Image 1 (cartoon, rainbow, N blue to C red):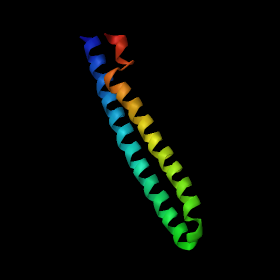
Image 2 (image 1 turned 60 degrees about the vertical axis):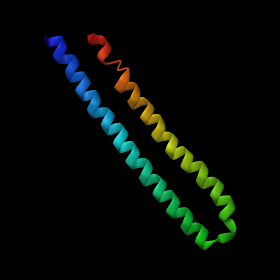
Image 3 (image 1 turned 60 degrees about the horizontal axis):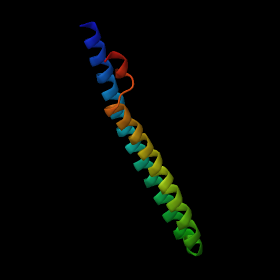
Image 4 (image 1 turned 180 degrees about the vertical axis):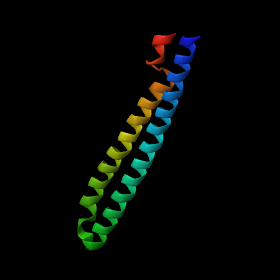
Length: 90
């Protein structure tokens, strides 16, 4: 019975960790995208002639911000569905 309780505890803590990883990662990515877009619009309003060169850099950075969230999501899904921590108790 103790082994079953440990497995339940590992799964519960993993669920909490997965929720935090996805939630905080999404919030961080959204805040980062918002800041990046607002700074781009400010820079484009100040110097409209640099809009094209800034736009390429902004899209690259937005992709990197979103990629970091997607990587975190992949790690969270790995722990949710193929939990290596719970494998010791099975």
